[in-house]
Length: 497
Ligand code: MSP
Image (cartoon, rainbow, N blue to C red; front, side, top):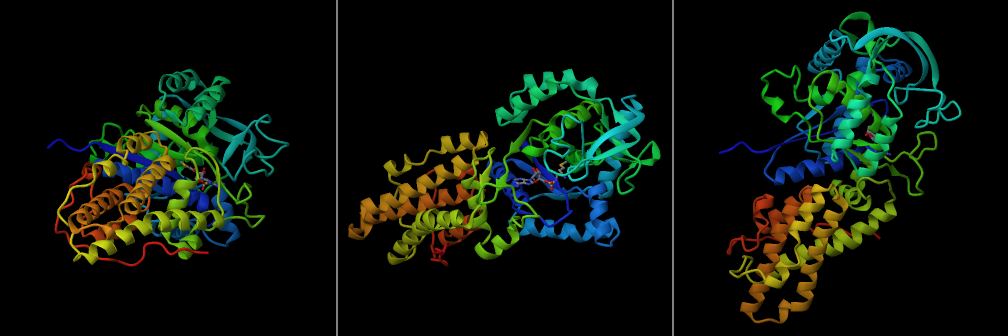
């Protein structure tokens, strides 16, 4: 048997400088949906997420908490791991930049570029924002403030190693221009192309005054700049360096998708692509930039304004599938969106409860009334036509997750309409059986398709139907065996007024 196609997806790794917020949850849920979809395709998936634990920002927080940085991150990382569990995230590894294999590979890459003569010692003078751990030019600041964090950048003047990133301007530009899928959505690729065209400066890649970091392999006085450490997690997460290593996990590199938020697109394209080129490592196929999730009024979540939304609390209140569904359906993937509990309740009541929950409940109850076994029949050909599997696949390939789930739900809607039109309770037993088989068979397919979005619900439907989880290849009608025993379960979604 040929080995299955591999698929490697990563998220950004979060700063554990505070508890995770809804933005972190959003990224994990969307990446999980894509990872699960590729598993449905029968691919061998490696899904990586984790935490970015070094640097001045973390060191500052640890100090404020009166703890050693290592102890501080060990305690904080628990919140991030818990969030993954709560949200049913199917990551293969949770990488921490304090993991020893990461530290080694990170130093290995630094050393390789240094030994090639592309990292040199110099003096850094400039503006630095420790919140995003990013250097800015005077022009890049807004009234002296970091454009992302809206707080004063600090002036730094110190000895530093520099990576000759400027030498990669043309190569990165060529790569971006020739590879339409290198950055998605396409508008973001254009944005980056225009910025790279303005030229790239050499990048300061070490700090002398930030002891909480990975030691520079060629000079003990320095630690690696936190982005020169963090970005490398994607390679170290699967042991893909040195590139000639025969490690079995190397089969996953290059990554298929780096999923990140729009605020760190420059780091993941201009900087990351240059580092990879310099280290002679293949570039990822796609960097996908998602939008930001904002408060109900469309403002950024802000600690000082007390508008940060805690995803853990939402899961406790509603359950993970309801939050996942909302995030995946409400926000056009690649664009910004707002979160409000009102909007979430509306989707819960109108779509999850009325559309899907109701369909499952009505269908199973009717089958129980005729003895609780799937009757022998064939699925109604007109109903079959209502499922546009080709479209769903295309939407998923284009990362239009919100449209894909809407399309799946439109089939659930068609099944409800089918019940209303056929009125099986009025039919003789043969005709009634044909309707009920059609419904059970359709539900089996719906459970497969919703699995990447709302996996717990998919599992519950499978249990009620008495079937095992299927793959996309099983989304063919008439595959449900007659005689399968169904059993009504708990109501899937309770409405909230
Ligand atoms: N540690 C860096 C990433 C290093 S990746 C090699 C970082 N961490 S972060 O904790 O600030 O952000 C982690 C991810 O969450 C980023 O992709 C970021 O864009 C995303 N989000 C942060 N706030 C967000 C929203 N409000 N909405 C959606 N995603 C957001 O950056």
